[in-house]
Length: 134
Image (cartoon, rainbow, N blue to C red):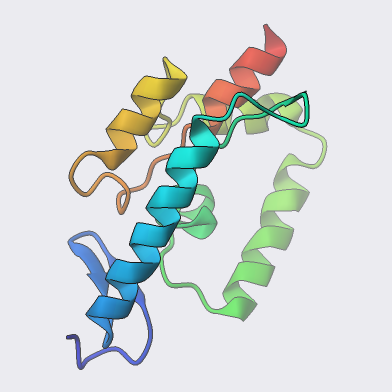
C-alpha cells in the first residue's frame, strides 16, 4: 500500500499505488493478453505482431513518467511537429536510442519480462520499423 499516491504512480523501483492487489490483478490480465497476442502470427489471415513502449508511451518518447493529460497533449503536438517531415529522424530516434531494444522479436519480449525492465525506458518498436524497411 502506498499512502503517498492517490493513483497509480510509476517510478524506477516499481509501481506505487494505494491498491496493490488491484494492480497485481490488472498486470496479470495484461500479461496474459500480451502473451496470447505476441504468440499470434496473424489475425484473420492478416500478419500481426504486438510491440511495447514500456511503462508508457510518454516515458519512451519524452523520458517522462506520470504525465498529466495536458502534458501528454502538449508533448504529443511537439513530437508530431518535430518528426512530421523527418521520417529518417523518427526512425533513428526509435531504432537507435539507448532505450531501443533491437534484435530478435521473441528475445525482445524475453528482455522486457526480465526484472524491472518493463518499468524502465524501453521499446521494441524499432524491430517493426526495421523489418518494414528491409
